[in-house]
Image (cartoon, rainbow, N blue to C red; front, side):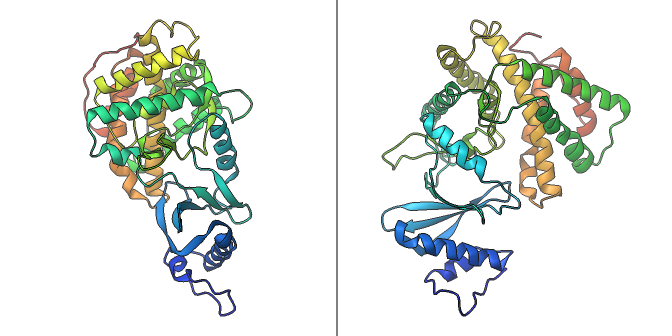
Length: 372
């Protein structure tokens, strides 16, 4: 929607740039302009330079704005749709853990606007598109180093618990949105029974793991490369949904990416490197995980399977409910992840059979790195 500012509105040299950002609500555009104008002098903002930086799967939007010496990120998060407090709180938590995340420089609580540090405009996912294997290993080492630092800072009672209720609510998205919504199928009682039995096993497995701080979307799309900055550590974004849950979650998210795929050997290599670091940090004093990588890897795969089922449902929901069809293009990746894990463990064979019925295809049984 094009926004027209009233004649009595303060003169803003950059109102044309603000107008070009696209607003469904003209009043919100004016609120944004007023807020930005109030910050311009203190931060030396050049309002005419404001432009779209990115959007995500939520209702948040991000813009970039320049000063004479640096750039900043502006977050537009309508308070009736998005809660900015977790973002602000978790940013401080991650900063205290020694991680590189955007500092909140100003926050208009009532309207849901934030001025943030800019960590650059190149994600690790974009960097990987033209990088070699040596660079990939280097950055994955950085990513796992940062992950261990985040997990070492963990303590209970700070973040919401990744408990059985949340795990089951996430799993329910698969049947509701992917199977019923996207595939237009209604599972019969036998199929539902098979699916729910797998859910029970996944929830039990994941709740059995030690708990740490969980980013919950830790992958190259949310990690920023900062080669041209004094601080060259990977930047971390999209952490506002962090919880306290299974230590296996973020490494599964990193290596079973929503938007990139890696060879199994490479996934194993990076996961083994993480395993060594996590053991040294005292994060894996549990069962025989310190001595048996296979036992640990089995739990990582089962945690990843829970995530894959959830994300398949979320991507279908984004298309059907939120009119964001681009995410469905990555759904085959998740179906592939689901099949690859289900065919490795006898307990999960019913899910493999069900996936064949849903997708109209057949699978062959593979092998497991963990114990079956």
